[in-house]
Length: 490
Image 1 (cartoon, rainbow, N blue to C red):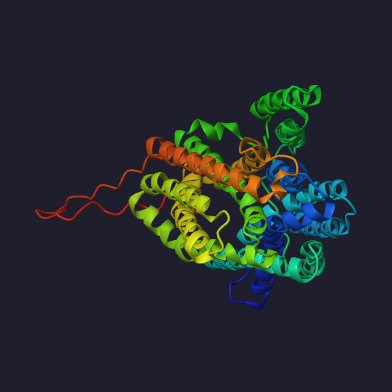
Image 2 (cartoon, rainbow, N blue to C red):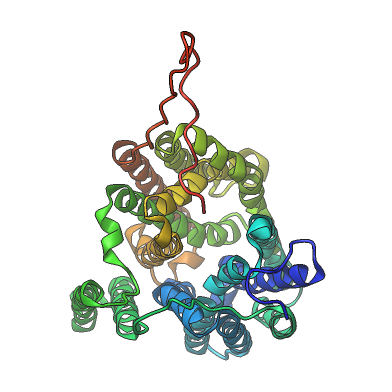
């Protein structure tokens, strides 16, 4: 077995490591995307309300978001391969439990447990590549992981739609069992172990527990409020408990020697603004992607396979354009793209209001999806790069994890609150006329959120200063200023 940072990109050992990490993270990524396609079928199977379907999605996102930073810390301390492998086992077993669920309650509990597995394996996959490959080949390995992972994510809705149409929604979970077994075998045999020798202090279990408790309580209040009434003692109690838990979480993170969420990072304006934009834009995106597959199937009468195929252009456009978007941002700075990109996303979401009840995919759904994809391609790369570049280089890893955490929390809260705000409650989502009106309202709300996010970015983001050209002769400086350097080396 090769030791840390000795793997070569073209070596058989290196390819095994890339395959294991791509399949592991891809398994979690695909599961997060295909569940939206399955929601209408699950709702009919269990006679579920919209609140139940919200819990099917947010139960997973809740534990994944709350424990993501902790999962990365555990890998650094106890071994990245070990924690990654535990995550794979955890995710695989809980996936089987999801597929075997006899009612909606069992499915929600299994999804909550599944999110814990996702939190253990997701940060470990990239950390393994970072620690295992030689510095010369590390960029190529991470690039392969990004590209292949993107293809897996793109194929997820299509594969999920096929499995639902051809067999059962349960197979979107059962398919993880053989994949998980394969990933575990490859990890044990081919992935080198690595850990952070400089890891100090205690693992922030208290912070993780408080963060998860606060998110769970607020999510419960937002989802159950429309059904039980926001004046219900149970809902009010949950909301109060969530606020108190959130305050306690902040106090613990401020005083902890090894905080899960280093709040000091937010003292940098660029970092705070970037994550504020992330919260708003990903909340809009998460809420929209929760409702779009449901609307396509209930209102437009798409099959699950057709609903999955309808969203493929979203990922394809991002795969093609994201790298170029990142290169442009490195040259001109992120402010322009982060200001315009979310507005374009908002236009795409607003265009989706034309899709309700239309039988024409090409004239209604496809243009909206393409505009949405273009906006995301313009936005995501500079947003992520700015989040990393706004933090000191030694904190690039935690800065990336925080940005990921903020994005997932935004999506979690949006899925919890958007249906109620749009007037979709109870079993009303099964009524095409009621869902159609609520969907249009929801898309306009999410579009407005994206415009707000773009406005905040345009005002708050600052481009890095361009390096001054040194004057070496009478014609020096006749050319324009040099292109701005990349925001981050990582």
